[in-house]
Image 1 (cartoon, rainbow, N blue to C red):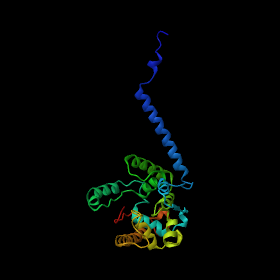
Image 2 (cartoon, helix red, strand yellow):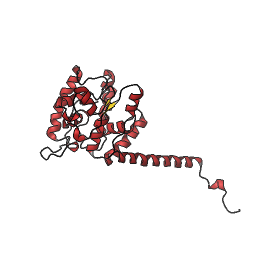
Image 3 (cartoon, rainbow, N blue to C red):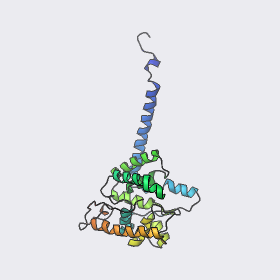
Image 4 (tube, rainbow, N blue to C red):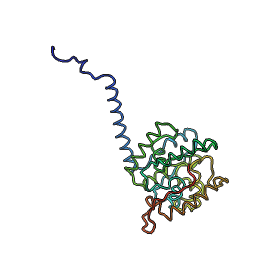
Length: 260
């Protein structure tokens, strides 16, 4: 009909339709991942991509999830001392740690063949629970998103609980309960300070280092972590993941020492 635009003229350009499609897909992904993260605040973590990879490779995957209340406070302090001394005070991503790790890796790390990670416990939890282990810009971007999501939706205790139940301790052993039973013949609730420090010490290379019969380098890491655990306990740096203690408030003091 004269005076009315044709159907073709009313259609959007192809690039606009593609952008709208991409936007719709991203919106769906945003809400689905947010819902899943919200559900995992109260639901058990079903498993991880790394566990599936280990099973496909023929390894005997062993995992015994337990609530945080059944994990020794020594273990909580040990991983905070070893991996993320500001766990209770940051919002998931530590830019200073990332920059320091990048500087180390581009100089000392490349020469020694030992790269250092700048990931917080929250970032490691996001990677282990939701994503795959292989490094890529896509994974790092998704890791940042899931880190922000769980920091907003989960209390610190839940992040620590998910972390300690998902991390690998070598040979297809996942979670601190399975590691404590297989390595030391006891439950995670009864780990001693040294046993907890030994398990935390091998986290950067669980298939290379041994918590039960540590070599010289691992023994040095254990000794350093034990010293740092004293500071964590003294300054209350693990209080957000433990029962409140008025006598030991969190100070947020940053530690120095071995990192991944």
